[in-house]
Image (cartoon, rainbow, N blue to C red; front, side, top):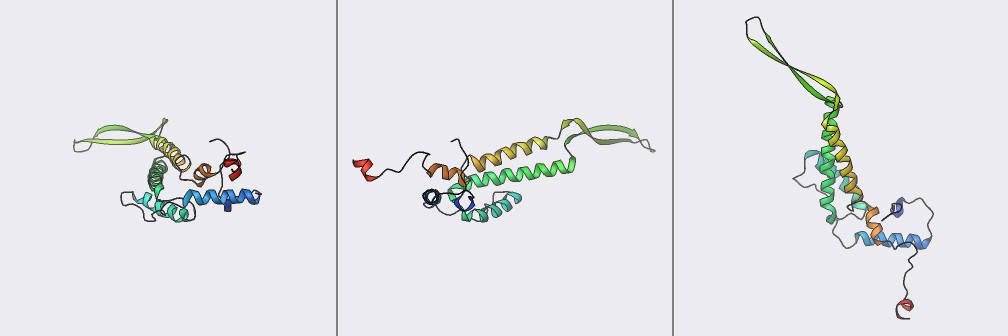
Length: 174
């Protein structure tokens, strides 16, 4: 559905009429009421960083219409977040360029062959962790926006379309 994202009523700074406020309030209730609340404890199969992110995010989501039905999406979000953080750490450790290795062989004083491996950045090739970061960023956004993790996506389902007015009993039965 095209158009602007719908903000929760308490985060909305625009001036809405009382009717618009009532429609938004009903949409927020409809998006969350019939489902069980989100599980606050992180599943054990998640990694350390993903479990921490699950705990952090699930506490924030208590006020929003996110329910246990969305837990799989939240787990995907947290898993991709962990992959992002690991890739970010790799880039911080080794830089944005790939590391190449040069092997040098020399002979020491005793006549033994010594192999030295020297790591050097290859300035023409990017670190593969950068691609992982880009993919993880894309997946995180996808989980949040397209799969229903955000309030916006639920409210779009329940809000009536622009120009659609509620039907009265007289409209239905004449």
